[in-house]
Length: 162
Length: 427
Image: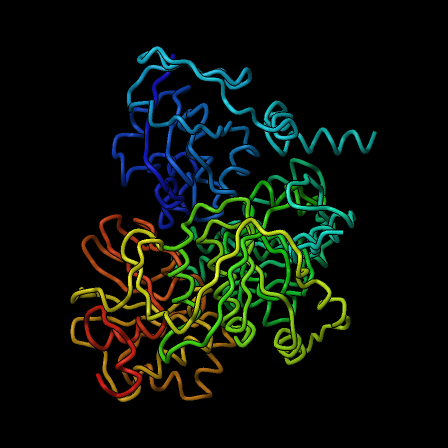
């Protein structure tokens, strides 16, 4: 069982990975993830927890550290009303599942939830509601299954060489 | 056959699939892949080494050091050295070290071509779309994969067409257009392209078209495009890189019966200077609607707001004026060439005489990485393209966005103000 962390619309890349801290090693940078709007997020989020948000999650910079920071903190998936394009690609490339989830308004911060990203099933234990998630397109799911773009590519390059 | 958009045509060429349309999932061959010191070599090298490959074609790769320039500490020095070493070891001859911001340096060198498929390791890559290219930003892993293979997947985007008729009032610019559009169209247009068209756009020089395409990123679009024309060709010819197949470039124009997601029409005559309040470019209102918002800093910089044309705008306002007491005006010319031109034209003299502080050419304070960042509680007006909370320094700082005119006028007044009276001598 995991905990839901719920945020609003337009969570941008400077909130996820502040520009003036981008020289820090990834694990240190991750400690500042979302600090400007949720000071305790990095210290309280547990591996397996899920981030919910409104529209246009991850807008702004191309910096991959925005997705890396969430993953390093153990976030198992992001469910948002909509995603900014580069963040969405970055998340999938790194093996962080990102689901479009219009019913974010039915989830409250701190709700206990159960998410099965492979089956595309979400259960909100606190409210008793269950959801079938819009599936991630197959060509992207294949990438997530391989553990991200680089391992996916490694397999492909090996296949081409063989 | 139903007509196609410019973006559909460019992607069709890159994918080798003449008939494709919005929605198709394709693999495109990349004509130019570029990145900067923050997103590029320091992230690419370990991934390429893990893959055990080099660059697919070093001649189609460009690297620009613009984020951590010049080095201010051991970490930024190491990042810049990593970048230089990579360019040398991987045979990247299009390497531009501390001569300006990638989105300005690449066109200055004639490397942005109409009809090209361009992948850049920076969210403002759409700037290149001003030349009629498909240009989109990618994260480091995507870029490393592109650097290794020369290709990437995408779903062909639908195009939002934005048509502008009429002409600007004096003191109104392409930047005002984009701040206005951030409010009108919102910033949640992911996986869409935006095409800028109409008589106003056709009459714009490349510098203004680049502002439109640049801030397509703020609309959330994957690319912003302007159809290539005589203005495009003249710009590239003047930089020693003429377009050989002009007819081919003109054929990229969207067909009259192309299918768009939406079409928006605006009249430039109705537009007045725009200011975006903290902490979003969509939080835009007419400059006339702001009371006396006191500022601590005014910043002229970044890919969108520090071209020679932008510095000239600032100089037009500041000629014979001084920066207000208690305000600091920082000017970071977008490229070394811009700085040189500004010096030669007397623009620099005007700005320095007004009390401006000259900063290095690079991304500087815009991305919070260079000098000129803000303390808690400080207020800045900036010619940059984003004012997200914490981007330019402390999360408790407030950043307003405006055109170079608006930034210079605020610097002189000490508070946010409509810049138009400063150009007519009424202020």
